[in-house]
Image 1 (spheres, one colour):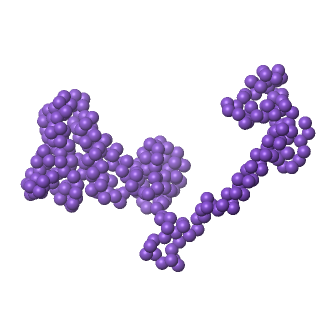
Image 2 (tube, rainbow, N blue to C red; image 1 turned 135 degrees about the horizontal axis):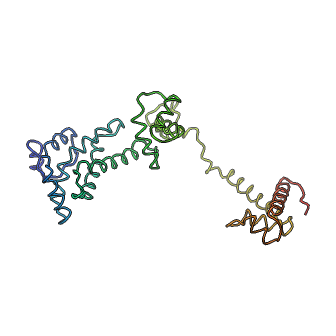
Image 3 (cartoon, helix red, strand yellow; image 1 turned 45 degrees about the horizontal axis):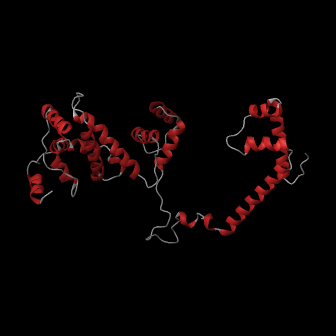
Length: 297
């Protein structure tokens, strides 16, 4: 935006041809977008058709400009998340531009009614990503529960069991889902390292008590050595079985795809129950060998 355009937008009526971004004072931005003239239904329809039929970017710009105040109104509804209103407005503007791009003027609805869903979607995504360092909701169901629970929670304390059941019924989820999201909402981000300005004697960051086992070479060697020892003993236990038992165990537990009892029954010409008995007996012998006992074939 040029200096002259910025002056005109601040002191007079904003031009529909300008694109505005919430830079500087958010209050000044809000006052500016509120001065952008609203479009009547006929003008909106004509501009939308020009965009659709001729990819008229000036028409798209006018449609966006006339609805910037709608973005501000929607963004104010998310002020309780502790995020800057200017950032919320920026994200909402992205949703508005996407809505203008996908708007079909022949459907018979006003752009504002169509765009509000796109605006909220972008703001929701921004809130989820930035409300906490650690993501609080990853699935679509958790995202919905996050916002619904924030709206339903009318006090600062924890829900009682009855309140949790009522919220769960209202949102169509389980009480366990509500309890888990409530716990996430009540948590706080904690830095791994202590604050630089904090007193060393009073600081108790996770770096002071969480152990990095990956750097303990002696422990890692011990684990690998034990695993190798167990693999050797398992191989010895399998070799101690008779051929049929060994084959059944291998195909039932050590190969992919695993053989079914019916398949082994057909191969060995015995009943399914007999295959199950052989398998059970072989597993018991392997367990005994792993415990230091001798396997009898």
